[in-house]
Image 1 (spheres, chains in turn red, yellow):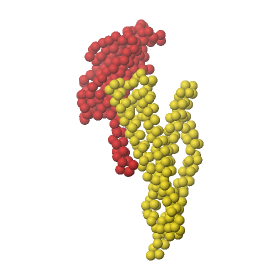
Image 2: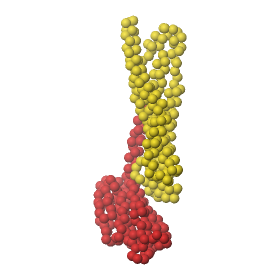
Image 3: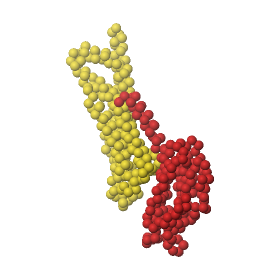
Length: 168
Length: 220
């Protein structure tokens, strides 16, 4: 191997290393959100980010150490941003693909509020707002360049959210 | 004349360092490519929740992956290190030496001819480069062995006593350092000796080269 070959390899490595910075992740662990009555999962992203969101809902109805909200076991309901609602009676993983509207983030925006905090450095955000419903913190479509999606859960459940994204 | 053999070996070491760095860079590129492919697969097809638990990958954001991918990254990195060390040692070991024996058989005229044919400036440059290369090589080797030992010990500990004393995992790097220093103490001592001998070799050669050139000048 001569020095020119080594320099080419170093150049290739220098080109490849920033590649890993186009990937983004955000997550909410299961432990903090067990047995909550009403919650809103807020997923926010820059509009140039392609994201895959996995929301795992575990209803607690048959669990022996169930935390009961409001004195009796609540059936778990999951509501999508468009208003569609489903009853969750067994452990269910909701996989949601959030496609990108722009290809490259030339004019990236920054915004923060209840349940979201998005900036070019942190283009993907996931938070759970316990004890709230979607209408109380609705900012969907209010910020140009930023997509915000709210998924509402009600009942007794455990919840974990993982969002993985990719952008140029 | 044995000094000539040493210089030849050090020159080979200096040139083998380029190969060593190239092997390490190729293994780093392989890890970055593997990681990026796993990231893309995670985003497009979903993370492998069902594959024997999860691990976080080297480089980049905390993306989940199969532990086999994480293990693959470590194997690639450490294979690169071991292959690099083997390659450098092999090149230095198989360096052809003793080329001066034939010339010495001719007696004093042969020896003078041999010394006259030496490119002293290039030889001094090689020895000087070999000093830096050797130091760099020795450092990378010790750091690499330390990382390898830390990873192996951590894995062994996690699957044995780790269940009983999980907090003790943080002592693994310290234990690894002690083990690596114990096992490489001879090699480290040899390294310091070699660096010192390279230093004295450099100055001896410099003195000899100037004396030889002065003698040649006086002769003409």
